[in-house]
Length: 318
Picture 1 (cartoon, rainbow, N blue to C red):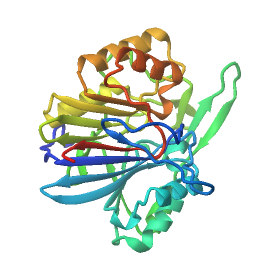
Picture 2 (picture 1 turned 120 degrees about the horizontal axis):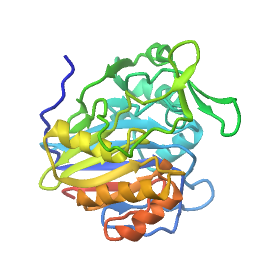
Picture 3 (picture 1 turned 90 degrees about the vertical axis):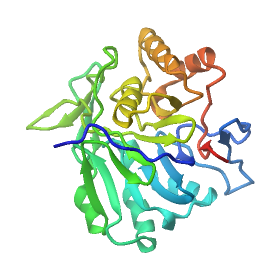
Picture 4 (picture 1 turned 30 degrees about the vertical axis):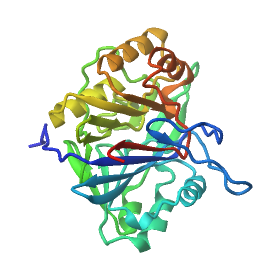
């Protein structure tokens, strides 16, 4: 039986490095929660791309644990950023993938190869259902499709990692939890029909049934919810974390909100529902889209953080 709830350990602190994202600005100032990486000259610049990758550390009962969630698409760029940010792959105890799209998995194999000599045998690599399925994009105005590729499970296993497929909530390191399959409740959060998956003889509409997000229960503050793309809807994603953790208070919402090219009324409803959760920090990344980012900046100016690749966010005790 798939669990629908999980008992969570509070974290004293969670630190999230955005290893890569769509945007970098060396002059962006620090914020209440964010510390920015600033380039120091030639060969010291952070790489940005249409992709997303996080490195995460949790502190539970004074003990620090680490994981990596998503891998971007350009492994050289991601590796460059890991080095510039001083991230030690040998500290990682688990890897996770939010969903099977190229801008989240293409960097994985090379990063795993770099990490392999530093890590214990059978270090887990967590995925949701259908993460290894072939995916496509239906091209607007044509009958054609674009091949979005496929991550191969056997390539990960051949490197000595243990693939763990989940459907319910689970801890991947102390204090860091996958949401499990995300329940669809918000009626306006729909997956665009142009996104396809190979299930039978031909591609069909992808419902991202196995998409995963991470959440953390920060002591005295509430939940920090971290999405990859939130194809299931960022409101649905946060509410899934609230449901399975039993924690209603939301401290921070961070990640891709997948509102790129969304209609204004969808952006408006999403913003209103996130604002009603009263988070103290909102960090739209990656696939949120300029119009939605601008709306969050305008309507939630006090909570809004403009993300830049290489930023480090700390929630909890400093």
